[in-house]
Image (cartoon, rainbow, N blue to C red; front, side, top):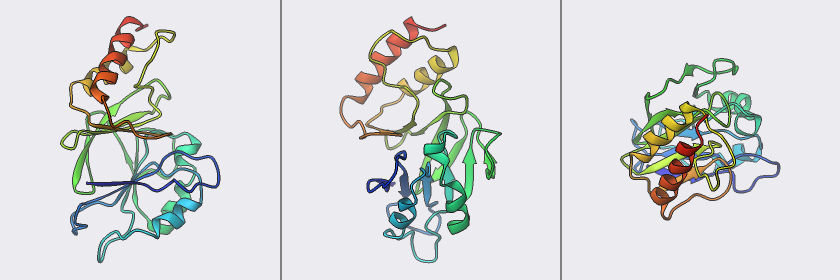
Amino acid sequence: MRITNISTHETTYTCNVYYIRGDWNSLDNVNTLIDVGRDKEILNSLLLYSGGVGKCRVEQVILTHSHFDHAGLLNSIRQEFNPRVCAFSPFLAGVDHYLSDREVLQAGDGKLEVIYTPGHSNDSVCLLAAEEGVLFAGDAPIIVRSGDETYEKGFLTAMERICAHEIKTVYFGHGNPMTERCNEHLQDSLRIVRQNVR
């Protein structure tokens, strides 16, 4: 699984947009975007990458949630590449497949498990590539530093599922990925969430 953040040259406020391809770009890999952002420069960035011979550059889009900075470019991506669009929200226009908790999707040459993670929004999901030890967190507040907030039980359930895995890298919706001591930070966060469940 090759993961590239293609939103590093943004010209307007947007989220991180992750482009997932297989290690060898074989025909059975599924070229996938995690979120699409809202900056049209992302379309130009995609043109710098090969999706593989005879394959569309973007075959699938998975949205972590429907906020505009994560989904604003969806219509343009659909017009340019005609991908299958997957999202948890039943209210977002242009979705081909509505996700369910624990569903597993192919992305690149790997598998992503959907973890419903309410809190930031009612349609937030994290996406776990357990074999690679990779978590795409979107804007879910999975790194908690203080007990000033309260959390709903559904968020605690999601945190417990995430913390049951060996996580090597967390890709956030904004900012740099976490590549060190991920499990330690997640376990610390889980302890705080458990103490502050509504």
